[in-house]
Length: 420
Image 1: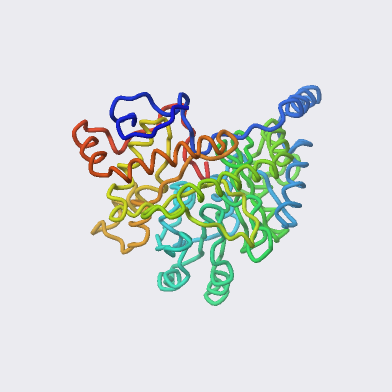
Image 2: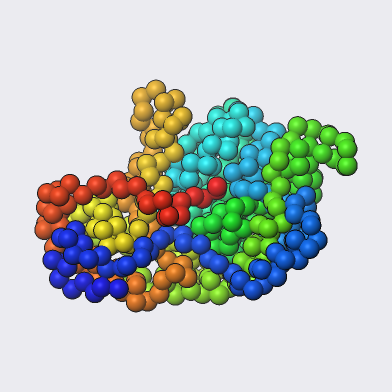
């Protein structure tokens, strides 16, 4: 790591980057290799590679214990999991969800023939605003999909009350929230179901994977049929289904991740507090806080950038960091309602989502996970403080050299995927 103490040492002035290797948001966590390889060898010896094998069954049981839900159904990914939940619950018509989410949340609903209705979020929590949800309900509304963004729980009680009052379905996208709690209860047992992601970027990975947690034995039974082509028994197909089964190799990876989860969370928590220390008292940069009274996984360290106070936009600051090999990410830019096919379906292209619009222009997820530690975080803090101390110079340099502010991640960078 190259220490940056002067403005001319920044990489945008042609100096070497601070870090030789890219620092990613969501770099995959790798569990104990010896135990993983032992499981893989056992799987190969059994020659049971898919179709609800012993590792998938064990993964579902251990997830159920962690999530406090009696039923867990593992899936090949969380996008299909959400699609199949909507199918199993027979939703028709409109579903209210945030625009401030990964696009897969909306796509999964749309692919089931549902109409996503994008709703604004609370500026403090970045989760669905219950008052806005209630105002968006129409006679065509079938359900609400809340998203536990950054692993911080939605306003669960308020959303549950709205769903009961209007007789609506309620499902939570818990892709960020593995191991988190709300009111002391594990996320996993709320609403009709909660959908988890085990994509490579998540705190626990199954390479690719997802799962549905639910309190309903009936719903779990339907999902088991749906993920396996609709089979109900050896040669009886009860309904239309698809292939969304988790293979044994994915479950083996996931079991190792669950065994390592507490250690990974402790690293994430330490990184989060180190970032808070770096930016304490820095005007215009707020590290989004977690509720220390709840259990969290601290996977995401999110800086909220006040461009007016900082003197640089979020994207300008991001461009400086990328030049230093700090691959900070914009989430969930520019908002689902600004992406296709939803953008073309809005006649005036101006949904009233002011909080979402501000967040997509101000949030910046910083590298964390087991790949970095205090030294790297201190280096990132120095770079940011240099930018803020010399904002005019940095801004002029970016404008003069036409540094792209909308840079595309290099091919080796993990996707900012939530559900896929």
